[in-house]
Length: 100
Image (cartoon, rainbow, N blue to C red):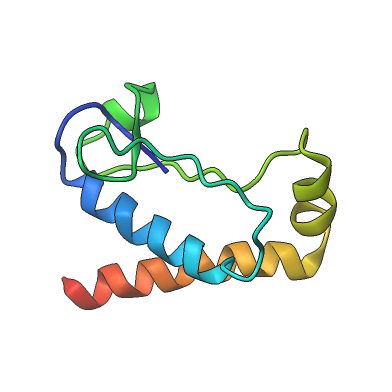
């Protein structure tokens, strides 16, 4: 999960998304989670245009990679895999909404 650089309101949201993603795919030990915990949270930080040119909290999620044969065949090219990605996002959004 990507956020802009520094301590922002997006960091907490990124952690929620990461936790739901990890819980949804906990059965698959082949998945490698890309994190950066150097600042105390799991989000990776970069000043991507779409993250810094907004007036609200923003994050980007990475949902597997087409150039990884396992991830592509297991998740991206199957309805079941795409449904799991959607489920992780849905659960994260529901948690965020309940806390507001």
